[in-house]
Length: 40
Image 1 (tube, rainbow, N blue to C red):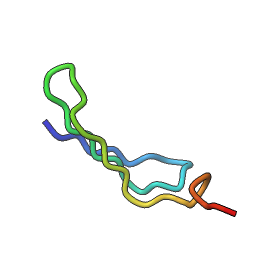
Image 2 (image 1 turned 45 degrees about the vertical axis):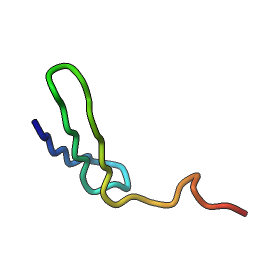
Image 3 (image 1 turned 180 degrees about the horizontal axis):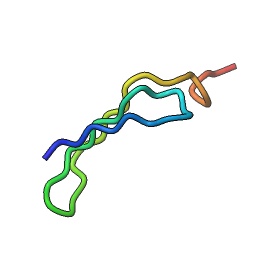
Image 4 (image 1 turned 180 degrees about the vertical axis):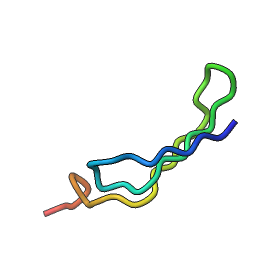
């Protein structure tokens, strides 16, 4: 089953979570800010 969550107060616009029973199969985060991913 796929769940879509729209977080508030963070950079990401949506989170898509694929769940099979009690097991999280996949998580996809749409949008967001660079945060710690930027290298100097």
